Amino acid sequence: MSLFAYPFMVHAIEAGTIVAVMAAVTGWFVVLRRQTFAGHALAVMSFPGASGAALAGLPLAVGYFAACGIAATAIAAGSRTDERRNLAQESAVIGVVQVTGFALGFLFLSLYGGVLENLENLLFGSFLGITTTQVEVLAGVAVCALAFFAVAGRPLLFSSIDDLVARAGGVPVRALEVAFLLVLGLAVASTAQITGVLLVFALLVAPAAAAQQFTPSIAGGLGLSVAIGLLVTWIGLALSYYTNYSVGFYVTTLAFAAYLIARLSRRLRPA
Amino acid sequence: MAGGRTAGIDQGAARSDREVALLAVELVDVAVARDGRTVWSDATVGIERGEFVAVLGPNAAGKSTLIDLLLGLLRPSAGTVSVLGAPPGSHGNKIGYVPQRHAFDETTRIRGVDIVRLGLDGTRFGLPLPWRDRHGAKVQEAIELVDAAEYARRPIGECSGGEQQRLLIARALIGSPELLLLDEPLDSLDLPNQSSVSALVDRIRREREMTVLLVAHDVNPLLPYVDRVIYVAGGRVLAGPPEQVITNETLTALYQTPIEVLRTSDGRLVVVGLPEAPAHHTDRHAHP
Image (tube, rainbow over all chains, first blue to last red; front, side, top):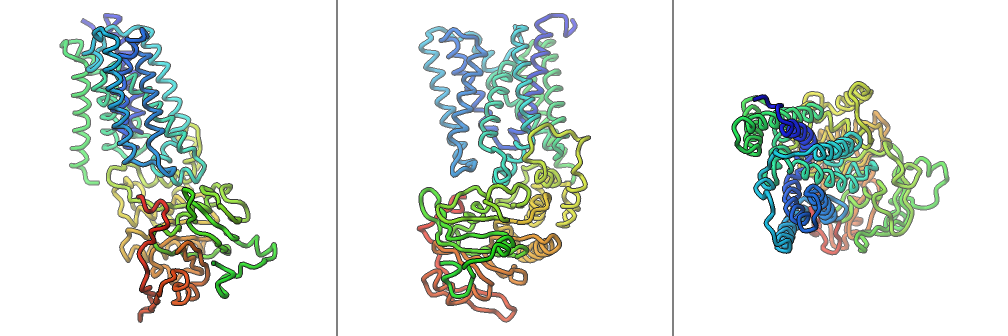
């Protein structure tokens, strides 16, 4: 049976493609800025987001985006000292935000009183039942995120590599940092809808980390990251369709394989 | 007190307008504070254009604070600061800056050439289109100026400390600055690299007629080149030619504890009796 025979599969491929591109570009900056822990914490926010949305009777996606946005703001606000990015403090703040998110999620769940539907899908992803509206929302979010990188990518790169010099040159380092975390929140909340909360890194971190192992070029790295993300998603969806095992499993395994190959190839090749 | 009150070291007195315009940096009775605490005060310093100035002093004395002040990242709590004839913070590409930093480690997978280019367009918003790139020649020129062509296309994390420092200096130079601020560029370099980076900075400032302010722990690699020394210690700032500042009397007065300056047979200066970093002054060096 053809991959495109059912509308649900077409939607899944559309959503997967959008998410793969957005996550690969965002992830390239996440790896460069060493903010994978922030990415993880934001992914976990989908849990309070989902249970909060259930409690309030709102759509799931609204809960995802709201929770990620709030957490991104909190992390950005708490992780600076003396006008500089403080990595030690940042990870502590992220840890606190993450555990608070978990606790709130559990509280919302108790207050809701019911059973959270599709908990397994929330955690490990599903490509079934993605609606046209969902695809449209994802496309809108992706356009916003990619527009941010198109406009602010270069100053963001500068402040990621050398925040002091960027600041001295007039780059609004702090504002960019907050904006990036918000975009990261958007990307994570979108990715989580395909891969599930726990497997977000498969599309967010693995393709970008593999690409940076393959090439130190900026344009090349971003392009390769997107290519790996797309391949992993498409092959993962196809395998899942034909074998009936979870798409999250396939995408994660393929992404891990890509990273492994990147590491091995770098080791074999002289610098 | 700096300048006027320390006999003959710096003529902080009235200057004619023409002289003032010649100054790259002028501080008059300046005090700075961080987190409500005064770092240093009563600083009167004039640096002429084209001078090579070494900024010396113990850890946490406020050397980087001086750099922040000149960059306009910090406002003086008293006095006036003038950089290239204008208030700080308005200079853009006219000031090149290499901050104090820890080396890029192997996980930073960005090429040196891309980092150098950021000195030219890194502050600019908008989508960089490769076919509209007009900076290639400038980037190449800056890289060749610091003799970094050989390793500029490698990931910067795989370059040695000296190579990284040269690339960062190239980035600071790419906008053709009139004033170059280097915060401990010799730190963490071995002795041969300390000498060669010092010589490189001196050669470039002569070629480009640039003013250089270089923060250092040890004046010795810089001694052949410096025109002036700024000593920051004990809450005060003192400026003058090295042979007048690095003396028993001046440093003893500055630190308020007996200091002895020895000259070795090969001309190196050794300062003996320096107290450890004072506990009552902090800047960001204290919390790396």
